[in-house]
Image (tube, rainbow, N blue to C red):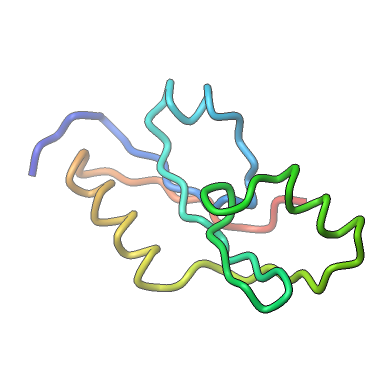
Length: 94
């Protein structure tokens, strides 16, 4: 393991943190799963917030689900490779 950072933060895409903040602090984002008319996308990666809300406004069949466990595990493994301390926040962001 290489300790590049003192601590690594992992959150899910529901946090909607600005890209500049993510980059500056090396925050790892686990993407939520967005389904639009039966097509799945990774939140932020496969569909932008602007596109998501556009589909909602056009009455598309839209749903949001937690990240797949394997995808979350990959993000935590990446965090663990950069630091021995990982802080996670995947709670209610209302």
